[in-house]
Image (cartoon, rainbow over all chains, first blue to last red; front, side):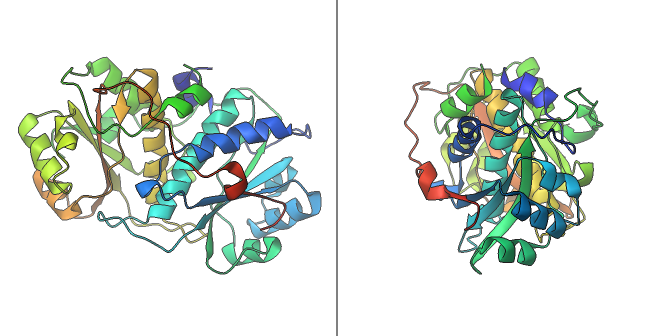
Length: 170
Length: 170
């Protein structure tokens, strides 16, 4: 599947089939993350892959009790092993780098007929307790991954290009 | 080009040919950004496309005098029109959302044989002055885009999967 088709097809999947994911497919998406660009190639991203049902349910509870998060056959808990370095422009490296890596995962998943959903509504402290994540590590997202229960495409509601693009100056 | 090939092929391009970019190709990459997911579909991303040579040179000066930034035929100045909303997990929406949109741009560009480079080393205040960007808008990245001067693939230096992936717990 080409890139623009994957981008057009990707949607946030909030209902998953019980079909498990092959290790090979998980490796493909994790490798997609691994190859992302990062600030000064710091590669601060770390990923905890959770397949255990009990642990998935605990994470779903810590994510505002969004049950579907635990129903996906795996959760990618996206972390950063970071010293909090800030770029000259004022942005945190690790937030941008983990986001870029997760964008790679979301698009690589589409090509494998897998769905994902970026979850930012979760209690970081609780997720860290559940997974034994050290104090200094940040958790940026918990991302369920699995086969969509309904693979049909839902139209994306987006602003027009005219609303978001300006030319030569603001 | 399929997604995993685009991910494997993408590199940070720091030397550009003078060949201009068609408007159609710029529209493709901006549309790729437009279709990205964002927190609560807030779509806070805004993009200023700079083709004017004098303005490009000024932006390159504001970006630590990285000359190549101004040599690309266009610069995508990636902004956020944001109220600074923070997700429950503690992360800023706009930083993640603009990063995700730029990841889409970087991969869509590869498919069009275009190169990009994420620049985080720039003086946000100066870039805002050059482009007349209002006080409340944030600038997350200035991203040159154009045809690579040397399209050969440079091997990416990355950590192994074992170094960045853990299973079931930290």
